[in-house]
Amino acid sequence: MWESIILTLAATAGNNIGKVLQKKGTMILPPLSFKLKIVKTYAMNRTWAIGFMMDMGGAILMLRALSLAPVSVIQPVSGCGLAILSVFSHFYLKEAMNAIDWMGITLAGIGTIGVGAGGEEQEASSISVFHLPWLIVIVGFLFVVLAECMSPHIQTPS
Image 1 (tube, rainbow, N blue to C red):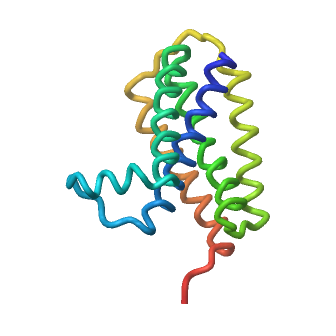
Image 2: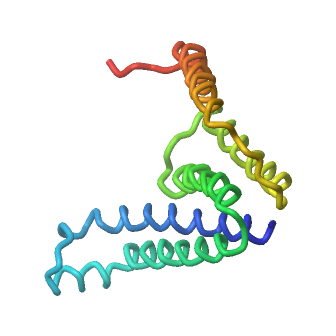
């Protein structure tokens, strides 16, 4: 299980960091088209090419992770890629981060460890179709409560 989690973390890091590098590389490139000259220009741009290779490498690692563990374990762990992307953006792109950002990154890491620790093979439990509306109502209620609690902390652009 842990091997698939580590592969997923590497895969999602490759995907997210690769996309940042591709974006940075495109800043000096013309708009993408299928003209041979344009494709060669992209391929010769070192930053874009490294980002592309990282993105593709991440996809291959993700396929391997999916072959080792269920999607119910892999997908939550891949969400940690956004935390990895935030840290990368902070140090590489010099983006500012506040205490709430760092707290979110820490919680994503703790959640990843929790998924790994609790992600052993389990038997599926059956859920009645009649319970699904209640689940939707409860999740919706939690989102409303969270939005109300967070609204004083969210700044609106002026």
